[in-house]
Image (cartoon, rainbow over all chains, first blue to last red; front, top):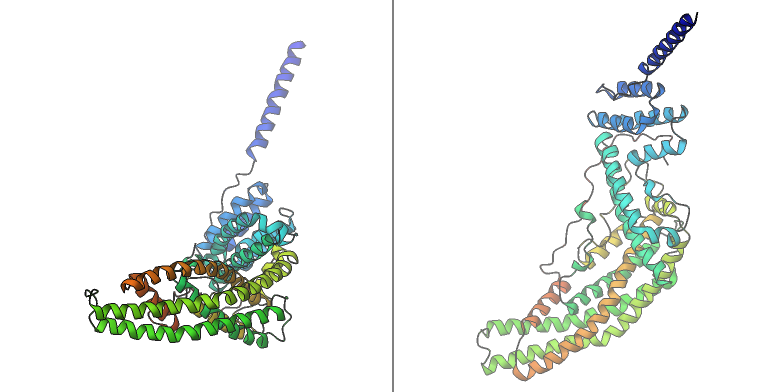
Length: 180
Length: 288
């Protein structure tokens, strides 16, 4: 009788481990999209993200940017916007994150200049860091506006805006410092 | 980093201090014209208060002082030019011990001293008006852009409401300290403001910043120039005893000529955007 019990226990353990093994084998691969066409790549990424790969969002976004660079055009802006809106609707990103992802690459304005405090008290003490952040963002805009969307005018306006901000901040911060 | 972004304000005029001041003189003269025109152009736009009447008055006064100085110097420089020409035509190079050449050299030295004297006489007025302008702009920049604005609102002011529209009207080339002559820079200010009636604030913020930074440099330069004039005057008074034309004098006169009469001065080209893509621009709901 005890031998039967032992056999049952061993059998149960073996079955359990088989079940666990089966679970492990369904873990998503989260591979990068293979398609070279942006629309199909987005579909593939959406499937992956819905299938448990949300943690890889940054990598997927970068993959999509790379694919879009291979097939540039003004319509890519809309494709990325719709993808980000979808991501936000699915709860993968907050609305603010979606805005950051979009504007950093496809808008003239700099997200690095977000801030709720006045320039004298907040921007000027961190001016160098702000400008470094803007410069990094400008290279992302070069990728998004220039290389992906072929929006030369948008990119050069962003570049000009960077220079204007640099000039105006230099003067403004100098004026702020003179009051101290 | 694009080359156009590299600001080279100290290369605006590549001359010794006395000559550099002349750059500022010309710049201020043009500034007045620029500014008076700009007021008319911007009369109908809601503006941040960067250029109240006091600043306009300060600028006008600076321009008047600068114009007086420029006028006075032009005559002296014309004379210097003639004297130098005579010196060269008389083949005095290499014959400095010749009594006639020494006499010519003393005459050139005396005219040079006269030029320094005019500058010395006008500089206190220049210093006063430049400082007034600088302080007025400083206060307005601090209040309007520094304290009333966040970085985001500042950016929106610079971008303007037309930022996201397709194919905005062509704008003048980059303002700012980009290595060109000051007079040329201020001519561009004029062009900018004269054509910016519908854009208003974004141009004004850049213009005010540029003028303020220039005025800051001017103040420093005037101070240094006054010291330099004292030194140069002493040196030239000593040289008068010996009838020597120093290389520095010749260089100064050449520099002054090039500034006043526009000879062989390089205007660094300013980078502008390539022809823009003309297709309608997509507006995302995520766009801010």
